[in-house]
Length: 52
Image (cartoon, rainbow, N blue to C red; front, side, top):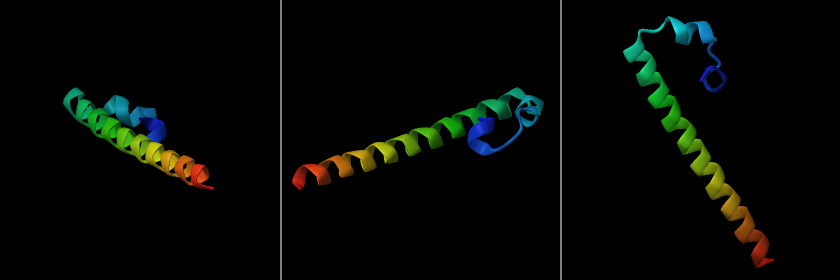
């Protein structure tokens, strides 16, 4: 999470546990969305290359 949010680990360690869990869930959702977008972009590139 520190890598994805450019936030020091000390910040995450200082959060109360319920807040940390909420941040983790939100971060995971963002990562999943980004991964899906990258996958769609790769698929589009592959399809474009096949058409040539």
